[in-house]
Figure 1: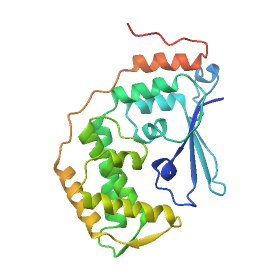
Figure 2 (figure 1 turned 60 degrees about the vertical axis):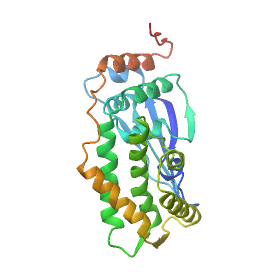
Figure 3 (figure 1 turned 60 degrees about the horizontal axis):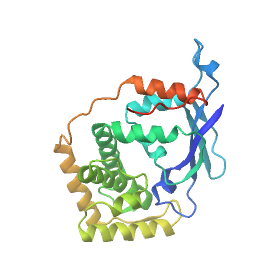
Figure 4 (figure 1 turned 30 degrees about the vertical axis):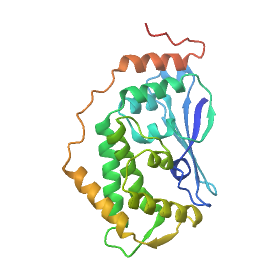
Amino acid sequence: MRILYACESGSRAWEFASPNSDYDVRFLYVRPQKDYLRLDALQDVIERPIVDDLDINGWDIMKVLRLLRNSNPPLLEWLFSPIVYLENSRYIEELRTLARRSYSSVALFYHYSRMAYRSYHQYIEGKSTASLKKYFYVLRPIVALLFLEQHQTLPATSFVRTLAEVELPAEVREHIQQLLQARQASEEIGTGPVDPVLNSFIDVQLAKWNRASFVQPQEKSGFGELNTLLLHILNEDAVVPQEV
């Protein structure tokens, strides 16, 4: 087995970790070619028990390419993580290029809008206090969707970077920055009073997206290019053909 890529995911990659947040390491791997030429398919996920503050798991390249075709948001966040521990294949950049070119806005919309809606109604709405971490489980997908609306391209994995590039009311931005500072200085389970300004902002955004069709569906990319990329990855000596 060869590890192609390893990165940080979760709150450290999103850049709203607390000082004692876990390390969520994610990796992509490829097996020897013979492992892909068998009738009994091998497991395509490797998971390790969490030890202390270290959480590690990885996905086989076959799974990765199938998920890339479906614009799987967690995979996209891994590929564009600001914290990369290992990049052991020249084809990782090919994966990023495919992701930028063929992502589905609809897939991202449904993933992030449902994440925000579910977290808000479960952890914040109607409460007097709330987990600072859970607040960002609502704000991160909302800011990602605003970025997608305003820029028509993939949002960064980093919440801080994405936040800096979206248009927001000044008061809302100020309250998010205050919450971010509190989160980064708190324990992992830190809590605080709910913020009426942020709750009002969240209510408006969720109501808007609940009524919206968002963008026109995009067709999935075909398997041809992904199959070709798989062959290149399985053969380290192969050369990626240049476009003409």
